[in-house]
Image (cartoon, rainbow, N blue to C red; front, top):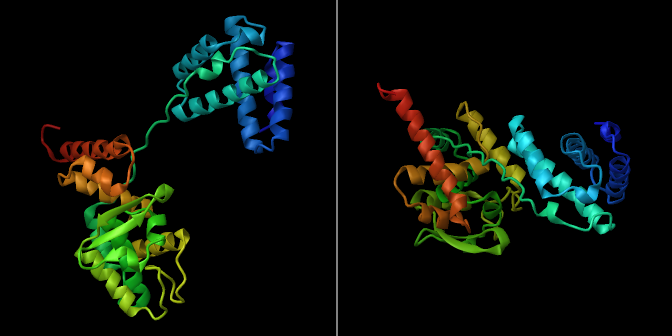
Length: 303
């Protein structure tokens, strides 16, 4: 993307001059070339709209009204929510730059709220796929026992990969089946793992030869990385001959969705996932509704 090509479409000299200065400022700030290109393009589109549709030739006269009209124009054109959010970010950055250097006094335009990004429904695997993988994908070897324990733990607790990697043997209470997870911001929560998960972990620890405080390690006793976990899951999918794409986070999504589908209260799922906000968990309730609709449309004669 040629960065400065966007500026040539601007007719108002002061707009062109300030865009060139903005480009130089972003370059000095060591912004990524792609960021500079997008910020410049998005701001140029806005200023082009302002000079053509609003007839404004002075930056001091450009405010939140013009930005809102521009955003409405872009929405009418069918722009995606992601692109709209990026447009607002670039334009606000340009006007913050103008305010810092004193070209513009009023900061009303930077108070315009950035449109929320569309929430994409998380990918979820079926219970049958996960159980098939647990039953068929792992040989009875040291690594096979470890890898089965990893997949069982992800699905059985809804843990994040970072929480699995950081798990120590002292965090597991085999008697109660409870596990201590340390999540984002070092927040600790206690979750049930279930008899099956605990047994798979004990099978692995009994088979490994290198002692370690960490639960999930290499054969030499080193704590695993997130890449290791992804590779283990991809290998299990191949061995189980599943026509599916799963990531460790897919297991977390599946854990939450399957609980809700089986009648568990959303607030309990929130606690188990370690979500601060209930709204974060509620995306799974939407997902279960979508799945119910899909089943209805597929099987009900009146669909």
